[in-house]
Image (cartoon, rainbow, N blue to C red; front, side, top):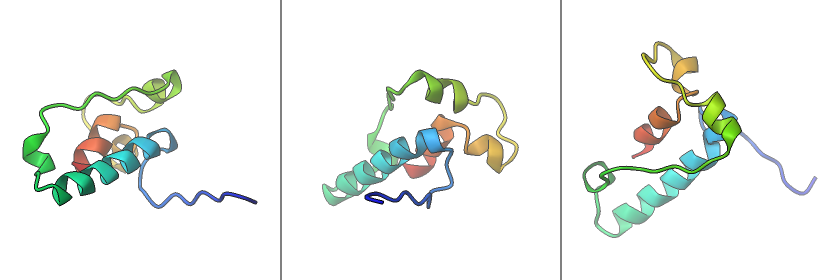
Length: 79
């Protein structure tokens, strides 16, 4: 096997790449003296239809399964 994927982030599979990108951007912002919590006004995510359909949970997020199926929540936690 050339590449092995271990899921170390508590996120639904379709959102992991967005969460990893957010983690990298957060590190880059902090390294440049920015505070992601205060210096980001909005986030626009472009993804494929399956991700939109599967992890676009709206409404109350009552449990871990709800939270890891909500792209907005997953990215907000990182930033």
